[in-house]
Image (cartoon, rainbow, N blue to C red):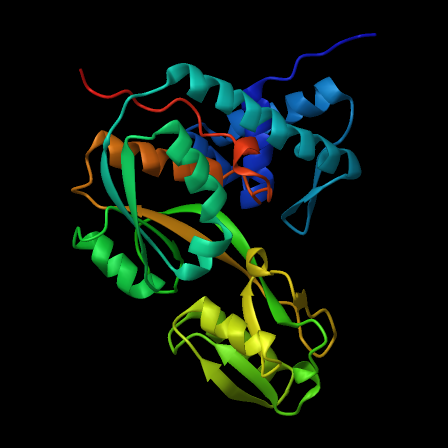
Length: 306
């Protein structure tokens, strides 16, 4: 059997190219040049002997073999980073304030923070659940050390670390989506989830009405569970008892970008460790819903100053 060796950097580049949909953005995130990223993907295809990606109307699309390689690549990279992180075993301590909307606090962050706590037991993370717009102001004022937020049209700064696919959601067994006008459970005015939902329905000339407004995702979910309304959230928020609506009456929605901010005054090793951890792990793409013991830490963290 002719064994080949796949470099971690090649696999990491493939993961990032697929998640960002851009060689340019991947080069920026990984600190490489665009030609270097292209060569890594080409080298990976040469080693596997299979085409992995193709360009369709300027979009990067995975081939069947590409999807297979990607699934293994994510596992390999995570295990690789787990090993290095465990070997590093940094003894960093401190207090870090992390702000994020409750939408991400309940759907995306739990497995990451659970393992971060195992890797850095001396770091105390204070979690604050606030909507994205006020959070950006708070982190810029230094009231929050790190913030994970949804990118709004007027946001500046921050680093794109993840993408969420917006979907229409209703409760299993609910008929709210059949009502006319469609009853909607939405976040307050100014939120991009709300804007995309209303714009999509109006493009289809579908009448709608507001059945629930909540600053909390749990409030929207409560209205959905009660059969009162349809809502729009990221696919990662689809929980038990809810289902994604995939009918012509509810047109497909775009993805939204998640930005990671760090306050200029957050210079401690603890803040740096959490920021680097979130940036790395979120950029790997959709997170597996696994037990905390199966979720790996990020790559080697910075060591505490002597």
